[in-house]
Image (cartoon, rainbow, N blue to C red; front, side, top):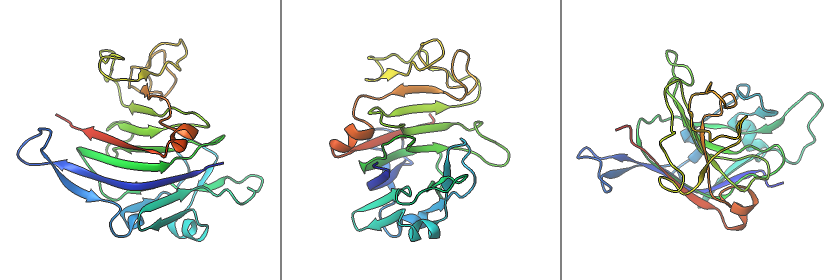
Length: 231
């Protein structure tokens, strides 16, 4: 099983003070410079989605060779060498950036993404503080896939009142709305309790083939660009 992330570039631009035209972004962060892992917190709490995973600290991840950095890339993986004891979960990593953002253009290049039974890789953003619990400030899943699937998904998870029914396949984006709903209808309601959708399904677009899984890896990976413009 290919249970690793291999990223070769990650960074972002923020809008310049002068405006928001196509050239009005200034380089803000390049995560590949310096110590990549210093810029992140390693999540060690229980998995909020109740997955069969044991998220470990940076020190444990480094000892188990689950993370490492070279001059041209970063490796993040899951423990694929040890048999998991009964009643325990497989060790893996979840990283959360120390910096928070309210807007910007975010770029990530991935050479290899995890694929395999039970694997659920994701690159995503969400907002939360002690006064605003998820999903008050929303969640944007930029890259997400599962098992051996060859399609990635882009999804918004929000509170009530956010719908994307007006966003049309083939006109506004080149992929399709996910129709993995109880009634087979398009998942265009971003509300986590949206009617005729699974709990927390959100509004989810299924990307074109070979944007995840074996297809992505055989093609040498890919680059994602995500523009977040609140205005």
